[in-house]
Amino acid sequence: PDGARFDIQLKGSGKTPFSRRGDGRAWIGPVLREYVVSEFMSAMGVPTTRALAAVATGETVWREDGFPGAVLTRVASSHIRVGTFQYFAVRGNESALAALTDHVIERHYPQATGPLSLLDHIVARQAETIAQWMALGFIHGVMNTDNMAISGETIDYGPCAFMDSFHAGRVFSSI
Image (cartoon, rainbow, N blue to C red; front, side, top):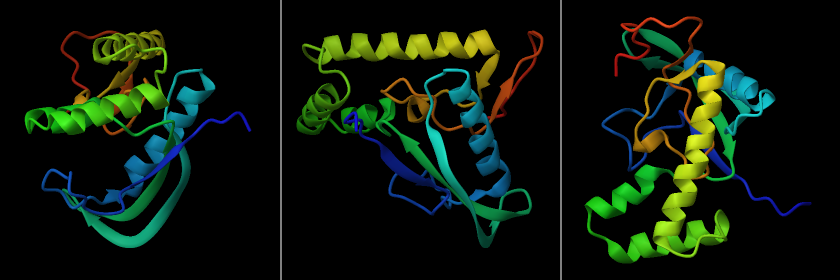
């Protein structure tokens, strides 16, 4: 009713053209973690993707051992990531970058007056989200361009943790 748009993504449904040599499958543990943690983050007022559904696939997903497979239906205002811009930039595809920039301005940042203004808005929104993470002691275990949504929503609760107390040598992800 308020005109808000949402994108849906199926995490764990299989390999995509953007997969990094993986099988694109997920197992139930990480799927349930994302469901629970994203709901907590939403309840705390932190911008986040949401889990619409988590379903078992009946398949075995092989990692260090065999685990029950699952698929997460993830909902967000957008699944466009910093890495989406990076993908076109490293290929020198300026027309795709311009089209993506125009789309993001129109859909998410209509107040932006051009590419540099858009960057300022995205950085400010991500900084606000990360400040909220820090206030909760949340640690995103894989902070890379693939896991930074331009909407400022927390995306992909792969390796993550909540810090109860600070330990300088503590590592929350081996990636």
